[in-house]
Image 1 (tube, rainbow, N blue to C red):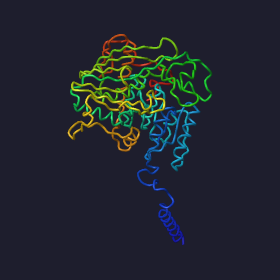
Image 2: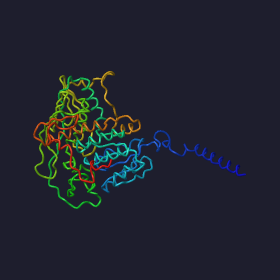
Image 3: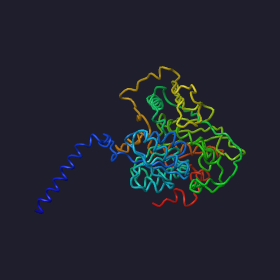
Length: 459
């Protein structure tokens, strides 16, 4: 009797399961099955919900069905709530259910078991530490540039990411723009003869008034926002807008970065290195002149000129006096490449529809050249965030890996040090130290305010 009862129960379970399975396709979306099923999607957490996150990183990632953004984090409660709203509304508009988790501490987001990967879109001084901690937690990382605040912490980041074998993509999205790849391929394949000079056009920042200190907004954890940098009184002009997502003032404060030499410099130096074939090295000599504000609270560089010499005989000149972009000059001609009218955010410092050709050359026929099957073909990516997601799944190296990002950022930081010291500096790209220059070497790191900073990470 007992045996019959058990068999009947088993029969009912089997037939019920069969009936349910047979009916599933008519009541469940096809996306529940296959490679983009919820169980196969990369679960992403967004760290930093400001301008670059909202305008660029979040929508560029959410467009892919292979990923699902499930959490946001910010030390500003207003921006945190706006970040959740942006994600929930985006997925809601696509007919997907979304109840995005909110965190005011990125370490809690990283520790969450459901998170596979993080996007770090924070101010420059908050790049390396969360990226290192995410890598230690075996989370994949999309990291906005500049890669680090100092050369020392950039080296630490690269070493840890490579040891942990996670996928880190640097947000130097010019690599995914076809004109930058094609320009580099033309140069690498000798279309302009032997390359001897590269001219990088990069603007400086203006000076400004004296910041007016005020009460810290109740929504902002200002101590956490300052992080490893020194304590200071709060001023909206030096942080970010209380309302809206315009260009933030911290970009013009050396406490939090180095100005345009790192802000846009990493984009152009990264792209230039592609054509120069110097992605895994750096200059051997650097010298610079620069104007710095004599008054006001913004203190990053203004007009400047940096000269960097490489062991392969190439000289790279960088200045706001050149058109914004990269001009490769060889013995048989030149090629110029730029973004054209493309802007990652609405407040990027280039005019819309500026009429500048995104690709130009001394001879227009150069731009009709076909790269042959036996010539150098560089890494092709259609979009930076999509490439990151693909590489998380495949295990392939992304188009902007951490070591290349660190090397490009190092050129920025070494150039900035040269702006500060009125002499030619000799740089050893192998050990990443200046040659016989204690003063310059002391600037490869910054004192960090505990408990924040890469020096305070527990390994």
